[in-house]
Amino acid sequence: MAKYNPINNDANDQLVIQISKSTSAPANEKLERDPLLPPSNSNSKQTRPQHQQRRLISLDVFRGLTVALMILVDDVGGILPAINHSPWNGLTLADFVMPFFLFIVGVSLALTYKNFPCKVVATRKAIPRALNLFLLGIFLQGGFFHGINNLKYGVDIAQIRWMGVLQRIAISYLVAALCEIWLKGDGHVSSKLSLFRKYRGHWVVALVLTTLYLLLLYGLYVPDWQYEFPVETSSSSPWIFNVTCGVRGSTGPACNAVGMIDRKILGIQHLYRKPIYSRTKQCSINSPDYGPMPLDAPSWCQAPFDPEGLLSSVMATVTCLIGLHFGHLIVHFKDHRDRMLNWIILSSCLIGLGLSLDFVGMHLNKALYSLSYTCLTAGASGVLLAGIYFMVDVQGHRRVTMVFEWMGLHALMIYILVACNILPVLLQGFYWRQPQNNILRLIGIGK
Image (cartoon, rainbow, N blue to C red):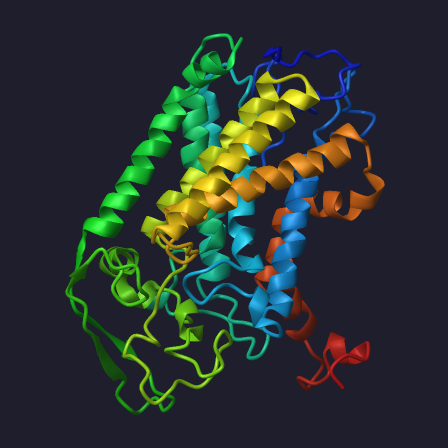
């Protein structure tokens, strides 16, 4: 019979998690490193605790693998559109990146706040971290770095993009962290039922968010709308396109409630200007790649649409909460077999539910972050976590995953340098007298 005991601090236990002491927390407060911060220098001999505990390496490997996958689909997706984000309905390799990030943030939060005695202090730590990440996302993804081709700096504040990848992670992080801090019960976990009772507040929040999403997505009426598309010559007036909707419950690219809410609240001028649905068959003759539009292309093909919008971020938060529950299984389950068995069972149920919802018409859709997409990708995240955990933390095969482990420890920095074009800017953005005399040309690249 499975045992449900809290993990103790026995140095011989191979499953204990590495801890670090917060400088502003009480002396007996033990914390896992925050998933949004770079690794500290706690490995130095001067600051190493007398009874050092092992870190759960599989979390770093999972995070690093996700970063590597992100780099792969960003760089190769343009060459192989099949692995790039799905133009609308469907699932591709790139569509797993965001759920993987959110899932692992939830898992890490369960470890970060497992022994935080003061809820007010914990809240004061969580809110600034989420706010800093959100502001960093606006700075990096709002338009200040336009890309590696024109290297223009600056952006019109009236058209800055408010949402993005880091902003979505920040929102999900904050909600999950507050749930973990304030909605966690005080009871001792001795069975599956007591585990559910201890964290029933988390499941209530997840259920409320899911219900709210479904009610808004399928219940809101979407009226006709229009948008302006700029022409290449600045002296010409922008083209104005009218999009005919007048429907309720549509999940198509033009008339869904996700886009309508973003247009109403954020403003259409603040949305992503290169919509993913411009690669659909209706909008591109090279679908699933970008290309010229067909002659009979619908009017919405060039309309702005934010893949990290407000309503879709509601379900993204649910993914983070699911990851939080997987982290609770780490905290309260001591045996390898118990952890992995529960992970696999829950993951299988999520995958089965996601496929069933897709079969009945609630299609897998990353842009809308549909319920079927949430379930399937969260289940896939759990399966991947179980596999990495078995290979790294159970079998001890760390050598083959050292690169991913390092990338996981520096995930945010790698994301900033690579995915946000900071590294290309540094390599190409500075030259000697002529733009051709940059660092890349100096080392023989781009001749």
